[in-house]
Amino acid sequence: MKQEADPRVIKTKQNLRAALIALMADHRLDDISVQQLTQQAHVTRGAFYLHYKNKSDFIDRTFVEIEHEFFSWVVVSANDNNGEWEFEEDGNFDLFSLNRAFDYFAEHQQLFMVLFQGEARNAFMAVVFNRMTELLTHFQDTSRQFNRETYVDEVNVPVEIAQSYIIYALLGVIQQWLQDGVKYTPHYMTQCCDTLNGMFSKKFTYVDFFCCH
Image (cartoon, rainbow, N blue to C red; front, side, top):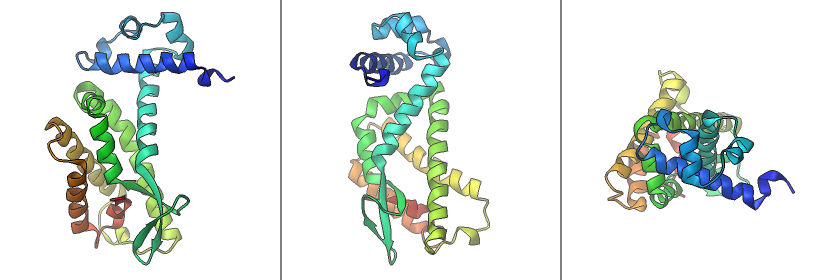
């Protein structure tokens, strides 16, 4: 049996992750020690160092795991049928589901409230930004591969600026929504973002990456 599949290993990592999130609510990342983490998680220092090199390694890998779980849930596959998305398990395009994203954030509100605030915000946002940049680049490359009409080359804006604009606009909306106590439903937030994206889609097809599925 692989170590990663050992229920004891899984439980240890889950406890350490929960401990990190709990401590981050009241402490800066730099101020959290391995001793605090292990005490909060009720695991030994030996168990911690069995799986992680140090605190930085633990934090980096935990953020990546959270990012992976999130995108595994919100990325959906589709094919382009004359400008309309047909969602299929093995579609050629990978899209970002706004509906799934807002549902996920609402369900894990406390987790992301912590991750989107204070010192942790910069570290976690960097992980999410890098992943969304990869996905957007892949979307544009796939659009060209399948001769899907694209206008991004006609817009006199460098690609990296366009990607940053789109990604941080969405993340900013999500962050504010969480800070406001999720006062609007995920479905309504999806509709609002889809409406805003529609204002740009005729000139800037990067926003087609975000769907309502």
